Amino acid sequence: MSRKKHRNRQKKAARERHRSGIDAHQQQGSRLVPPFLQRGLPISLKSWTNDRLPEMIWALLLVCPKPREYGLDLIRDALARARREGWIKEFSDMTLTALGRSPDALKKLLTAMCHQPQIRSMLRPMLLFPGLPGRSVWESAIGEAPVLGDWATLAGSVARSLGHQSQEATDARWVRVCFMVAAEKLKLPARQTIREVLDYPHVGDQRSVRPFIRSTEGAVSTFPREDPPDRVWVDHFWSHCYGSTECAPWPTSFAETKPSTGTTRSRIRETRAALIEAQKRATTTTAVDPRLDIVFGMAAYSLTLLDELMRVGADRSVGARLYIRCLVETAVTLRYLVRLDDPELWRTYRVYGAGQAKLSSLKFEDVTVPPGYIDAEMIRAIANEDVWEEFLNIDLGHWEKTNLRQIAMKAGLKELYDQYYGWPSSYTHAQWGAVREVEFDTCGNPLHRLHRVLRVEGRSQPDAVPDAVRLVDEALIAVDEAYRPFPARVGELRA
Image 1 (tube, rainbow, N blue to C red):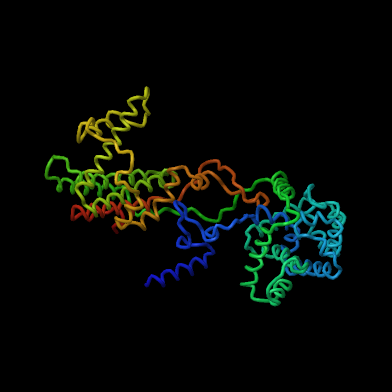
Image 2 (image 1 turned 180 degrees about the vertical axis):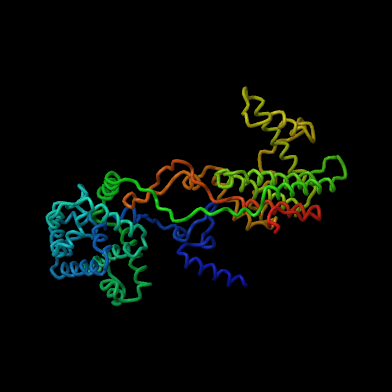
């Protein structure tokens, strides 16, 4: 496939998944900047869920029940009446905060809409909130006290509109755009576009009309205003929802499947035995041979990590992600050393490791009670194994004066690095993504904005052993390249 066709295919895939691919991001220093932020424009971000949904909850209560066209026609007719009678100019917006600032016009709007008991019942959940803007006007128009079941009605409307591109959210966002067009606060370039907005969703191709409505409403939300909206109502809405309803567990629909590891512990032992035999055959002298020791030592280290992952429960633990990171670094480093096969590079890698052992040994020497996880004597012996440590430098940088990503590219394992190094590293460094995945559940109550609640115990992770098997086999391939033949692998179980 040509490079141009490949780029076009990537762009098409990005459009279909509604997100920008990596190729669309621009590298600026150490950051990858998405397309929206590349122009450096001053953008004021306003979240639909956090900031704008509560302001349009009245419209959502009307459009969420089926058929939705009933609520849309109701709102459209009320705005048309407001335009005919001239009082539409009294509103600055269709948000609850803006409506509450114009009580006389709000009374007219509600009078135009609440002409049937059914409509008043649909809006009744509004009265659950003591801090509702213009509450007295709403109470007078609805004429009914809220009931306990109104919380469920409210939750249903919120649940269906939390996604800013959902049909219900689009309908509520249309209300703001339709009002601005009807009130002549927003000038649209073409008569057809005006018709598509005013007669939504009956005119035009909705595949383009709906995105236009969403983008327009989003842009309107960032306009400078004479009466800038405050957050009193928004904050009251979410805090009152949280204080009045309970958290709910997020429903899970997936079932645990029996893991398919791709290997067994006996297969690992067989491979290790083959590795030992190969190392014996390759040994021709008892002198220090960095290449021999590193090739077979790193491969054996990979097998040990995999064997530990095969213990009951280890494959789905947080620690398994750390093992994956270690295994990919081992495989990439070993393949890099084998591909370049430079005697000085083999020596550099080994001397660097001895220097790290010396550094740790010196630090432990100054500690009254050293950590229990280390064997101080063993570490000191490693530091002095090849040369007396008084003649051993300590390198505080990377052993190859580069990084693992560059090493992976030179080793021909960039794809492997991309797949297995980045995300497991977040577990190693206790980054937010890993902490979020392991320690929190999402509250299933939509009135709580899908917030996070701590789990009783850490979440079990997907089985890491199949990936670990692949990484170990990558290290064994390096053994085969350095000391042919070495066909043994831990993967591809024999029949």
